[in-house]
Image (cartoon, rainbow, N blue to C red; front, side, top):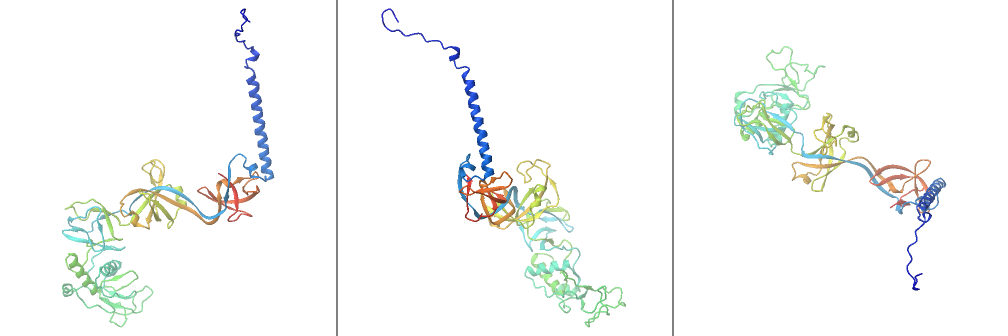
Length: 452
């Protein structure tokens, strides 16, 4: 106390070492850690007991998560994978000319060429397109000439609107006969019955398929062994064959006149270009005045398709005819079908962005996809797309959210009912956060507890 009788502030008292609290936090921290550890052990033991005893309250089984109630529903589940692809025109083919001469006209890139239209010109004569599987591999001039190349000509002229007359039925014997000068000039000729040109017979044959009779005289007898060597050997019409009748020759002459070709009634190798269908010119390699028997151009189908480069290990889940969904650049979709799967493994050229998903040099197979809705891609010639492949589909199965599954200590899964009861379930397909389930007491509309 001050001498003047007033109270004066006292200097602060120094804390003793034992009051500084330096040692107490250590004891406190140990106590806290010990309490936490005891709590964790106790909770873990309670959790194990709850699993083993199939606890009767949702709070016990899901004490560490927020839960909600879900309903078992019946739905379709599917497994899908999305790969990168390229939209474009399919089946690129390189075309070569089929006869001598000089190129005098070529189509522009992007042009579509259909049946009967010129694909190019040789010495200023058009080379039209025919559809078919068999090209012209010989000169067609003699009446009675038989083969699949003749059928190609007959089928195309018929499709172009020309009257080609009737064709001898399968099994008929036909003897080729040279066309006379008068017939070639007139473009006419008397067809041999029934509709053929040249001699025909439906008579008996031996085991080798040859007629057993003499020369055909309309009595059904086949050629005789005494025939002169200069007589053409008869040929039996087989399935897929056509016969060059005088009516067909006349149709060829009329078509040649209309197409701007010499009207001779004769077709030689290279006079027409036989393709599988209409084509789109994707590139022109030849130039005007180049030899016509070299490489001319590259063509594609007129149908647009999608090509996807796939890792060979992923192809096993795909098969021809499978349906896919194509995501287009404008966020619309188009349905497609796997049209072909290449059997030749190639090495990828790029890294991210190609269908294989691997780096350069990764093995891959090309999967070709035809589009069912071509209107969706009408304005696109080429574009990157995403293709969703569905490898497995389960229709009308019972499903719950994946968060409703509880792993049992003895193995397997269960779901928890709102009253806390656990019901063992068998799981099936997992897809997009849902899982297929089945089990006793589980049906459409059953309520289960799930994590939220």
